[in-house]
Amino acid sequence: MSSKLATLAEAVASIPDGAHVALSGFAITRCNMAFARELIRQGKRDLTVSQCVGAMDADLLAGAGVISRIIYGGGSLDRFGRLNCVNRGIEEGTLVAEEYSSLSVAFRYLAGALGIPFIPIRSLRGSDILERLRKTAPGDIAFVDDPFSGEKWLVLKPLHPDVAVVQVQVADEEGNAWIFGPRWDNEEQVRASTRTIVITERLVSTEMIRRNPEWTRIPGFRVFHVVHLPFSAHPTSVYQAYDYDADCIKEYAQMTQTREGVQAYLDKYVYGVKDHWEYLERVGGLERLSKLTADPVLGY
Amino acid sequence: MQAEQGYTLFELMAVAGARELKDGEVVGVGIGLPVVASFLAKRTHAPKLTILFELGVVDPEPIHTGVGLADPRVWYRAKIMSSFVDILGTVLHRGVVDVGFLGGLEVDMYGNLNTTLLGDPNGAFRHFVGSGGANDIASSAKRTIIIIRHEARKLKQAVSFITSPGYIQGAGSREAAGLAGGPSRVITDKAIFDFEPESKRMRLLSIHLGTTLEEVLAEMSFEPIVPDRVPFTEPPTPEQVRLIREEIDPEGIYSGR
Image 1 (cartoon, rainbow over the protein chains, first blue to last red):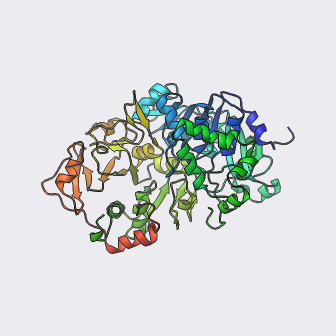
Image 2: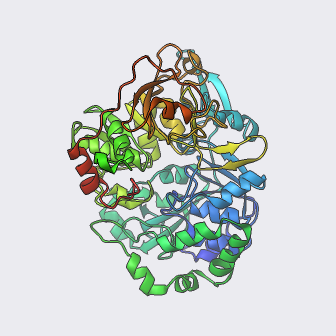
Image 3: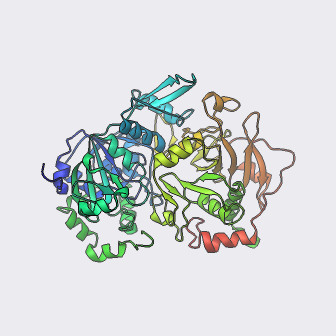
């Protein structure tokens, strides 16, 4: 492969039905929204998604019936509301949820990234999260004796997602990527996964990357596809690039309260537009997006 | 509410939370009242406090209020921006967090918290936010402070789901599960509780001015331990109220003014 540069449609087409996809979103920031919308348009099915904190990208995919399993640490749309589609799926039994805590999922990615067979953790003990995992994920949790102290420890199985999809501010065409702001689970997700798709707001030369290599959070040699797509996290925020679109997230939180509302949302913002560019026009075009553009001092 | 006293119940609770934090401590916070309590402590008696957000933010100095941890407004002027593995792993799991703030849908008399679901876990239930970093904080912080509204449907005999363990079944059971620490305070809009050292049952510590013991007990689904003498909670000072209103939460987003 001469270049890793791909269109969003090409990158999405590379994901087979049934794949495990790690998503980079956290609640309402740096969510893989354009990617999720394209997964839905391409009619993908039976995906597993994982992320430390459930976010708007996973919720939209749950609402559209693209995912059948979620491995996560709980989540919300912050003050905008619950993850209506994920929660409804759990309540109605249509979505299998392997529900952990944030650190448990982060440690499972870390173990995957390090190539170690399991990872001990103090969390989950004495909780109903652990009791429920004994039913939903009996093969992923166990207890072992610490060979040094003899103490009993809960251990978790590593996560090895098929694909990590990471929304970043800056990348070159090799996939070397800078993530500004906190990075939550993204670095471990990439390193635990078999392959990585980088979706970047800005595409820069490798010469630019070489000028600040200490900013590189995602190693290009682990990346398969690079998609250059501005405003691809909209309506969620990208630190130093643009703010979240409060009106659009409120509309989503409102519409997803019912199944009918979810369908209407999908018709309006996913099926009703042919691609990301048409989506951006649908939400107000350049006039709207200019207003969301981040102040360089504030970062939002 | 309580306008004649010059402060709101939210401000009273935030000040009570701030008072629990000692200078030099490391505190893990979520959004809302814990943010106000921590920033207030840092601007008054605890300037060397270190404030952590689980997703990888250390010691921010926001000038705008945010809608949650995912809002870059609350990351502004942070000293460090890192990751879950850094904050929840190398700091919290390593044992360096002194205090964690927790909230929830329900809490029981042993300080077990539910943020996951209401109803029957094996039957019909409504699912909510889940753990996030709450279970991790409840498991590894040296102590936790629980903030919850004072209502009988929230202060329960038994919670629907233990998301974040407190003292589990009482005396000895937290240790048996392999956990140290545990909740040190429960701050509601009517009272403050601690946990009786032997039984680990919730014990009334103080009642907020303007409420009565009868009102406190009427809005609880279990009986806390009530000592012979229960003082009133120390009210906020005018300066603490001013800091909250003018500097920490000027838009009234956290306090809902």
